[in-house]
Amino acid sequence: MKTRKELRSELDNTDRRTRALLDDLSEEQLDVPYHRGINPPIWELGHSAFFYEYFLLRELDQSAPRMPGYDEIWDSFEIQHRNRWQKNVIPDHGTTQAYYQRVLDEVRQRLEAESLEPREHYLCHYCIAHQNMHIESLLWARQTLGYPAPSSVCPVEQAPPAPGNTGDAELEGGIYPIGRPAGSPGSATSEFSFDNERPGFEIRLEPFAISRTLVSNRDFLSFVADDGYQRPELWSYGGKWWLQEEGPSCPLYWREENGQWQARRFGQWVELPLEAPALHLSYWEAEAWCIWANRRLPTEYEWEAAARGTNGRLFPWGDSMEPGRADLDAGPMATAPVDALPEGASECGCLQMVGTAWEWTSNQYLPYAGFEVDMYPYMSTLQFGDHKTTRGGSCATSSCLIRNTYRQAYLPGRRDVFTGFRTCAGSSI
Image (cartoon, rainbow, N blue to C red):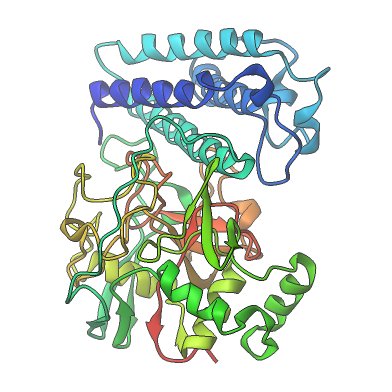
């Protein structure tokens, strides 16, 4: 369990990163056009503050709202998505900033106490984690809108693949741990986790082979060049419907100019970095590539087994987050080659399993047996059934949020988020 000082440090860092993503935007840029995959940045700020207020401050002392009459505006499950753009409904930038500042100041006061009760500690950790989810959504909003890259982004130079880091890792069949202990959220002994990670269990897996690296832009470009988007036999029933509705001929944010492929990174078009991981891919595109390559997507249990091993590590390299081992926190932003960061390899030799790209798995997003809803009932339940499970976090994910057991859900047709994939040996059909 994190100490009170560690939580305060995470709160301050989360606040700083949130402000940095907003403060360098003009008022015109903050007034974003409607898009189904993003939220207005000002609403994101108010919603984050409301989450602290509602689930932490008011939960603990039964206090009155800090902004009376606005609960239904800031609560994401009360206000319709499109209505978050209504200028006569959403408070202005200055009003929202003042509300946000007041709430975070009150949270800091609680964290300055000599001790925290377990329940208060858990609620505070949960709210900080929630705000970090919205940091990621602010990052993909900037990518969606073609805004300049945030100041934290530091692209790395491309390099040729290193021998021995590609190919498949062979995993033995056997018993592997999945998920986190059931525990009791808010108890003095429980480690933090979300409801979709609990209750943990063990599963017997047959031997399998999984790629050490993510699929690269070079790999995916071969599929595009082989008319992959025009060949119906490579697409499942759901994939064909998605193709018909979306009409893509290449990945999102790719274009061909004068015979050269380019990719858009935030507001800049650059030469397609062939050795970097392929990003912004839907589940249907990942599935079609696998059919084309005579491969398959891993199940989420195979993915977790490759990341954790039989000993159940919390991170691919061990049991604590260590700087420099993964592409997180909007640093390199998936510009390094797929065989980079060997210091972050899992026990079986798989690279970049944490960070870089949310990895599609073949599983529908469903609760584990014995699932119990958390303090925030909508964190998982609304996505069960019609979403696909992704694992590992992305280059935009906060390092304080991710671990091997963390599960995220996206609709299979979505590709504005930082999604990619790795594959297993064997056909998916």
